[in-house]
Image (cartoon, rainbow over all chains, first blue to last red; front, side, top):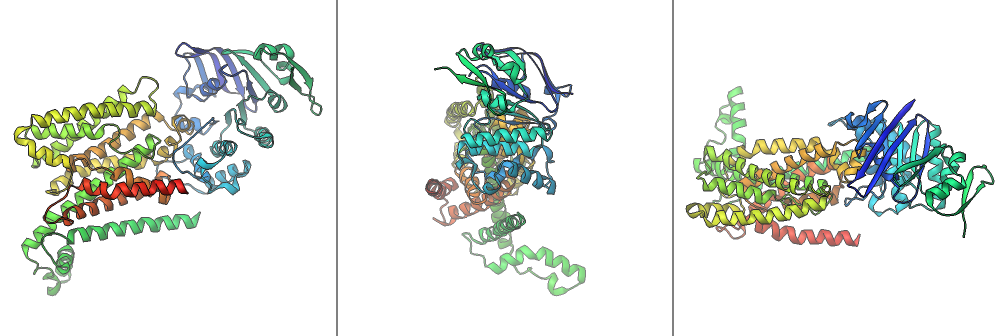
Length: 257
Length: 353
């Protein structure tokens, strides 16, 4: 069943940059990685899928209904986004940040109930942030802050999780943990679409990859189909070698000196 | 978690009690010396008299009848409305400041930052120059004119900042430009004001002398409406403090909510400016202090800021009339003298910790 679909979507910021003719269907249970060089339009694609940007042409639909026509809170109960570089001048604690993820589930005057507290607790546990509840968000390292934003998105209890380079500021161990978390969430039924800069990690964890170059989808398919020498050289414009992962057999990219 | 909620309730109760205490103190002190017993009698006599009627207790029916009428007038017609208006203005500026700070994602924003104050000042000055004063008509017309001016300048700022994606920076820059322009318009109005000069200048210096129940009643609906809208959106304010994009992803209809909140805070600011002129620092310092004490979550911050704003303004007004009695200082001088150093202290403390 198609959850989120983009049909013939064109989008441009002024005239400098554009996404052209994007067709993409996200089905329930998918784990899609979006890869491509810097400036190819990966983040813009996520913003379009989340409805924050509106396409110049074409349609973006959530469960068959035009995304732009749906009520914001209703969308936020189904689609959560982990975006990059959220900053605030205010001293929110980690717990306050994550509780804010309950916003789409709460009425205007209603208080948070046990269900909300449970969702917040789960989100904190899944991101291993239980010990961080009263830490200040603004004082965290980049990787820790990223996990808080992940927890906030999880507290929304979404069907679809859209992530924009969620592992940017993370060391290897946390990167792996973040990917494991995404895989586990996906296994539990959450549909995951992530912009990823690490092609090898994307190959190891994603069920499907979408490669973008200069605002167009160049190729999509499972990692075995997408990560070939020809494709990677066409996408990134640099010479590489492809070899199977020693344990899983998934294709891995090695740079040539 | 439970314990935290309880202590927060106690904090509100404490602030509310302090507000009542300050109300009493401010009414009790003044150039005419009135004993505390007379104040207590004046305040409680309606209730006690009514109870006396009900249960036919002669002693209770006579309670408070020995307070001279002049004292009664001073307490109920002069001091009480003045303190009440000061409190309303403090609540309004403090809530508007907290809202602006959340909306602009900047803890150093104040209610005047988007030119609302200068617009409101021009509106009110224009109304006064057209001969409206604080009579029955003016009591509603001057705030309305101030409000129209405040909203007008806000709309100007908002549409001027449209180019380039309406960033916070654009809005601030447009606010500076519009404020400067309207400041010049205000100077022109004052230049041509002639007979009304004194009234306009006096009003602009900021203060509550001469405030009566008309002022109170004329700004009460604006205050109630604006506060309600702001409280209604307290969770959205938290989300907006993380940036428009993040707020959008959390289910906030960003443009619509921001519009409503800007209108509401302009409403509050204009209502305060219309009765007491420009009084700085309250809208900046009070929400900031409350945020340092109780955290930035607006559901907790807004009620605390409202109560503390009322207390702060009433105390500032009291100081303004007792420090150099019988001369009255402009309240803005007091708020700046107290608020400025306090603010520096907060900044320094923040940097150290």
